[in-house]
Length: 150
Image (cartoon, rainbow, N blue to C red):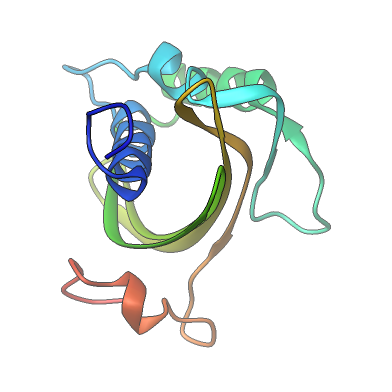
């Protein structure tokens, strides 16, 4: 048990669930920007799927997503399809298979990789990178436990 709240893997799964829930919104449900940013270490970098890879600050990512939610992206539903976590002491990596539905019509899949660090008894994200799934780059089988299709 860690902090009496569950295993480290349970605590990391809670971080992942909160991350995806905070980035889901609709006209009736606002995004959880504070919940999203609260899980990152200061100075954490994000690496979106666009190439060439360029680090993005968490605040810059939130600003970009906030602008999209106010304009063209009125609804986003992010769903965790499967998770694989490896913990070693106070560090961990997590691979997440995800499904995103934009504006209720356009569905895509991705794999997100998170580097986590346990500090002061809490797991925080130090870095996160993701890439889009496709016919030539499908989701790995172990990351689609909740998926009905890829």
